[in-house]
Amino acid sequence: MVRYERLLADRAELFRASEVRELLKLTEGRKIISLAGGLPDPHVFPKEELAEIAKEVILEHGDKALQYSPTAGVTEFREELRKFMISKGVKVNDDDSIMVTTGSQQALDLLSRTFIQKYDEVIVELPTYLAALNAFRLSRPGFTGIPIDENGMRTDILEEEVKRLIWLGRKIKFIYTIPVAHNPSGVTMSIDRKKHLLEIASKYDLVIVEDDPYSFFVYDENVDVTPLKTLDKEGRVIYLSTFSKILAPGLRIGWVIGNKYVIDVMERAKQTADLHSSTLTQYIAMEAIRRGVVNKTIEKAKKLYRVKRDAMMQALEEYMVEGAWWPRPVGGLFVMVFLPSYDIDTKKLLREALNAGVAYVPGSSFFANGTGWNTMRLNFSYPSPDEIREGVRILSDIIKKHLKGKPQKTIKPEHIYQA
Figure (cartoon, rainbow, N blue to C red):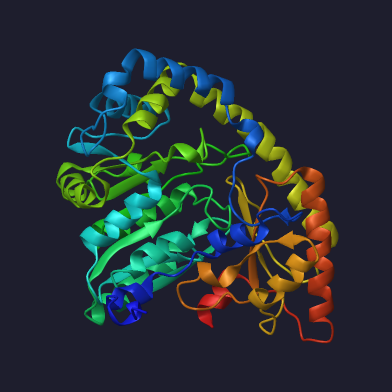
């Protein structure tokens, strides 16, 4: 037998299994209430419209749609994306380029490969999107986590951390943020903090990576959803988004908008990865935009997910242990629950929860500083309102049993940051 482990590169050790992906394996084929992965509700998929579009694309445009395409993406589709972004309030500058990626996850991987070197510093929110952390880790940076509250990233703490890193001589490559409908917490950055973030980036000559999969789903009124890309006057923001939540994740279409120089470098990196994203699904997505299917899907999903978000909030209020804290998600598909004790480990509780018929994502994977053991991310887009209610009830009973007799106090993200 060949001992392949002796042949693998050192970086192979950095390929961490996504806890969400692993949970999907565990729950597949089992009768489980899944509050885990951020799966869209299949009821919002425009199956008939996409079937019609796919047939027409292949029959009428098959010579192009089934062929290789430019690495940056089908030119006609990228122009359609530009118009779509502008219609959603995202500013696309004359010196910007748009590149199509195989889901926004590929954009994160390309950013890691083109920007980060060993020992560079990446600033992230605390907590943040776990798959972004996994992508960045492959380049071996250091991470600095900035806590959030109900108004998003604490930019006052951010500036102090930037000063500290500069004093230490660390090279900051970028600030990664999900400012609207944050994953995993669901909060949205206030307009004042968005402006402050851009001021900090300008003052210290920093780049911001804005990940924006969820701004299409904001459920409360009077919430500012202005993209950082639109507020940016200096070309400091690299903007990512995806069709995974607003059309269908199986299409695997995402995109990145940024300064032409940056996109050109990322395009060359993409050539070594997959040559180009699927030509066929680009044509399908292009027609879905043109025919209004994307906007129709967004509105349908937004109404459905608002009902489910409300069901999640009501269930948490009714069942969750006293002292637990969670920010009210103004948008997106998730809420993060902070349990009132550092002595509880949600990763260890998961097996018991699965045996009881409920899945969630343990929160520690979302924390770049290795904390968050007492947290869990709950998804409300996939399960029904009744399943949400029952799932939260079961989880709450398990948590109450494990917390019985332990000292309890409300714990928020800034407390974890201070710890």
